Image 1 (cartoon, helix red, strand yellow):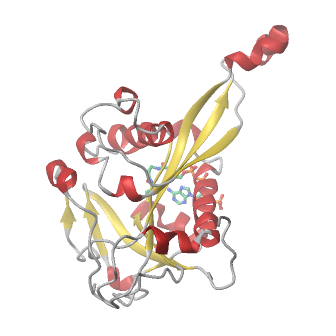
Image 2 (cartoon, protein in one colour):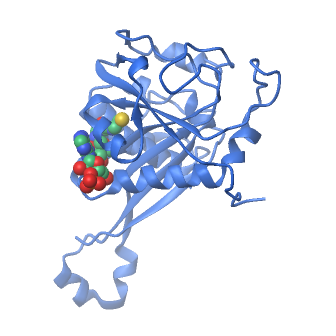
Length: 255
Ligand SMILES: CC(C)(COP(=O)(O)OP(=O)(O)OC[C@H]1O[C@@H](n2cnc3c(N)ncnc32)[C@H](O)[C@@H]1OP(=O)(O)O)[C@@H](O)C(=O)NCCC(=O)NCCS
């Protein structure tokens, strides 16, 4: 089976009608294809492999987030068959979603309390509005006030791990954020109650890292925020990490 990865982007989109009780492949046609594919990977990894309840995988941040999906272009034929088939092989190539990541703009709910344990209530998730700006508790890398963006839901299908797919996703999302830094200011519909103005992203990015993956995030430039401490989400230990980007001299890719 031959594979070549390619990557797709899905900006914030209307996901009204996404039914969390149905599998991604059973969603209605108005849900963007790239998002459905992201959910295919997330369900495979977080729900089936890690045991997160299916109802809790989709949340209110999905609508306002940017999503990336990596696909493997798979030809179901063996190399010998490909040669024999000649020019007809293009018709047999299928794009299979194998990895995903999302980037959530500000504002965010308060930092989790150290030592706490969260299980998400699907009904609460369904009805929840995006959070408002707050003054959060200060931590090692966050003063509690600065608007930050949050990378998360990083998942790679089991059989494709160890090939740099997560690294590709993380670096693609980080580069996009740096090159489109004003996107986040423009997409926020909420005035920062700390300043009374529309918020400005100054380059701070957060991740709530599963503990066993924190070394990978460190390789990608994130630092452990000691004062955020650790907490459990759906029974999985998480740590807070931050990375600062220089967004001063970067020209936006659009506009
Ligand atoms: C974590 C996960 C996304 C990594 O995907 P992957 O495609 O295998 O990762 P990559 O091949 O891109 O690895 C990138 C680097 O991270 C390192 N790495 C990957 N997973 C790691 C882990 N669990 N612990 C420590 N280092 C890890 C690799 O060694 C590699 O280092 P290198 O660049 O020096 O070679 C994947 O294992 C997964 O989906 N796990 C289950 C879901 C999960 O835990 N998500 C993370 C939530 S924070």
